[in-house]
Image (cartoon, rainbow, N blue to C red; front, side, top):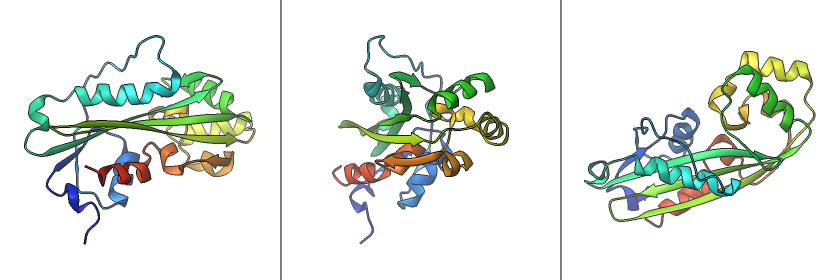
Length: 196
């Protein structure tokens, strides 16, 4: 029997343009289409705890879909990932300078990567979050500048991709899901999809 046979009746939509999330869903053999919500105002209440922000934003992204999107046996997956360092939330950098500041903050320190995921159908919605602790070695100025120049830190929370060069040379250890740091806690998502 094929895995996730229980959701074969659904038209699965990934509500994200992230190539990493698309890749991870492909790895578990899920058939889906990509339809990312447009113009979602990703702001959250001022006093939201850092670890609660990704779930809040994943729900906000899910709400961007009209009811007609969720009719006809549609299952929607939305997600958001943040890096939490020194109790600060690091999203995607908007400039080379901001990417440099983020990587300098992560250098030689431990941070938490939190991904919130929301699964929505016409009749139900469930959300969860997964945390992974990441320890970075001390990065030199040259290593930070090389990574920013040669790779794409601007579409990644915390300005880095663990699956890229900087993850190979800079991540000393992780406690938790590697794939969560990539942007989708695929093991937990798979387990949750089995319950739909």
